[in-house]
Image (cartoon, rainbow, N blue to C red):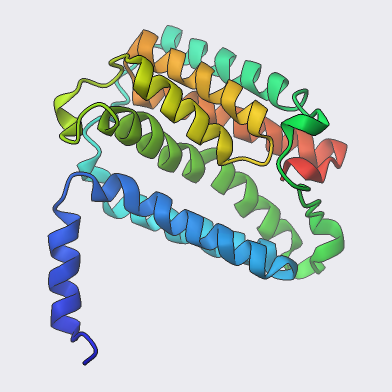
Length: 229
């Protein structure tokens, strides 16, 4: 017998009250869209628009649950995050040796895949999603949830930025495996983790990650190296 609307709402309410759920659910939805992109390659940009909007709305819905995010940070710390984000970008576009790439990255050139009516909105949402939605979603998942949950299932009992070898290696390796450029992903994970340990701030990790992805997006548009998208 199919579940009723009331039972689904009850199940949602039960899940959404769990502390892990707002940190895991956006990432799970994001990865579901990634699988759709792999299955329907000719519609990858339209799926990306839907992915960015959907995940962004989920993050907004749960925004009051992310107690680890605080924007009360100094200009000096923001500058540090920006410099680290630029550093990750430079490393990312250079760590492209054959052994450091999983599979064959798709060259999703929007100029050849999209008509004029959707081209610029698609590029806008691609950059917006990569530089805003993805950093928030991934930093909440990897460097707020996973890195602490690895050490203690009651992850909120562990202060943000607490170091352990186990959580460090697990998050870095998993973060790297999430990307086609696995070595670049590992290096990025190491640097974002180091920023987390040094400044104890998820917000600064979000800024650094956002800077990396934004500059990468501009670089791809300028250079035409679509493998990075």
